[in-house]
Amino acid sequence: MGAQSNSSSILVSEFLLICFPNFQSWQHWLSLPLSILFLLAMGANATLLVTIRMEAALHEPMYYLLSLLSLLDIVLCLTVIPKVLAIFWFDHKSISFSACFLQMFIMNSFLTMESCTFMVMAYDRYVAICHPLRYPSIITGQFVARAAIFIVARNGLLTMPIPVLSSQLGYCTRIIKNCICSNTSVSRLSCDNITFNQLYQFVIGWMLLGSDLILIILSYSFILKAVLKIKVEGAIGKALGTCGSHFILILFFSTVLLVLVITNLARERIPPDVPILLNILHHLIPPALNPIVYGVRTKEIKQGIQKLMHRL
Image (cartoon, rainbow, N blue to C red; front, side):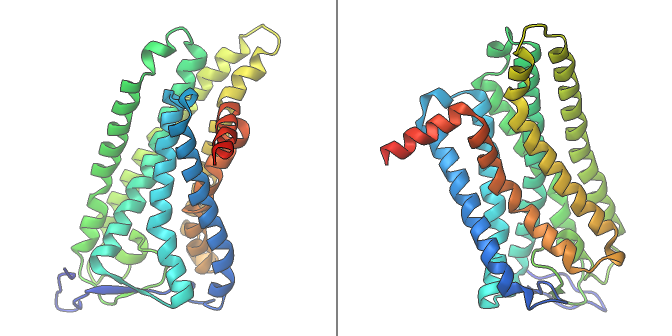
């Protein structure tokens, strides 16, 4: 299916992705570290998923939520990085019309799904620390299943109009100055008015990510308040240690996303290749670090990985 044409638009059956239009010589140098990070992300997340699946002690709601986060990371990586590497290695710049908007949908929906998963994980830690006696009755397998359905449904349905609206535009050119089919890069090629398209993405993006961030901050505010009331020696460190890994991941996820937003807003003041590189790294570095942080800081996961290694 191609873009609908008007008097000044062309029929588009595929787009051309031009990575780093000002510094295309970077591509070969970047392909090696990106490949290493990609393999690290795939291997670390796969190891984490297998460990949680094989180790009975990890069959708990908190680890099920971590498994969901790993699955989202794997899908995001597979959606973006192989195509980027194909451009770098084989100069495969073309991407079909439908594949471009499918990639756009997955990037938008899975990014907000990750944010929502962090929010549910923050609630899990809030209940564990502030209401420990009620934790087994509140955070159950059924709760995780319902949370997963909510995460997928909310973010999938609300981000679906973004690629749908973009696919209905008429396009004046098919050359995308980016390595991925981001809505901003694609809609900029249109001959039509894209105000509503941009407004919808802006409102939905800030509504979903903003509401998740507010709930995460509230959860940790209550956690901090409850922890400071604990008088038992060493209890504060133990309580904060249970959510330390989660907080590190949220902080990193939010910081990288904030830097990406700022660089896009200041697009005219910085080289255009910088936001492109940051966009790629945002889909690669958090997936690579998430399982490593949990593996290093969580004793149960570390022991589970060691048992898995001994079995091999």
